[in-house]
Amino acid sequence: MKITRQKHAKKNVNFYKHNFRFREPYQVLLDGTFCQAALKNKIQIKEQLPKYLMGEVQLCTTGCVIKELESLGKELYGAKLIAQRFQVRSCAHFQSAVSGSACLLSMVADDNSHHYFIATQDQELSSAVKKFAGIPLMFIIQNTIVLDKPSPKSLAHVKALQSSQLFPEHQKHNIANLKSEQGIVRVTEHRGRKRKRVAGPNPLSCLKKKKKNPTTTPAPEQTKKKRKRKRNKPLVKPTPETA
Image 1 (cartoon, rainbow, N blue to C red):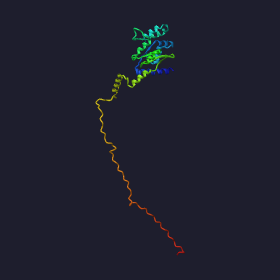
Image 2: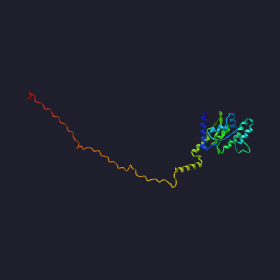
Image 3: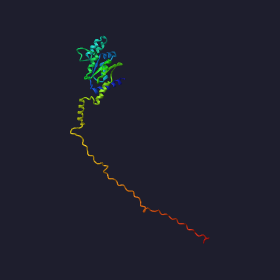
Image 4: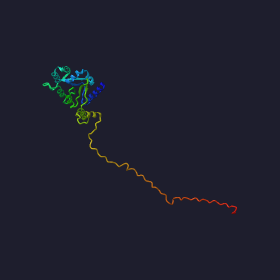
């Protein structure tokens, strides 16, 4: 089961690497609900996440998440201690803090330019994240960390890229450069309209006609008459009486 889970994780990570330019170290934004679930299920996040994603990982959170955990009291004291061990990324709410889910959503809503993974147990935050393309979503289920499969929004975005509907201009330029370097670009300069060539005669019509051999019918005079053989009558020998 563990091998199958890692295969699925590798497949999903490769999807984001090839289509959304995710690179190591993978940056994972965690909220208080994920830290609380990890504490409850005795999951060592720093040890297990790099193994699961099969690459270097940077664990991070925001000031809003830590302030939210502090405001919730002793019940989430352990989750607050876990979150404080991670890198605190600056957000746009340094003057007035917002909820952890709202803060994390604002960190990835603008095209996720920093290529964040979102790790949360909040269903509302998960549903909101799936409305954007290119945001990997992680959660804990049955004492294990799971990387969710790409959302329909991400799949539709990739399909549109493949059909060149939303193909970035810089990628078109890179492809053109690669083609020119390999010498496979068609030369279109000094090329006008194609002139229609004068069609030559049909080669089959130039062939000499074969003369048909007339069927000769034998003249009636030349037809040989069949000879009738005359049978010789047998000679009758004279008998003594007649002699």
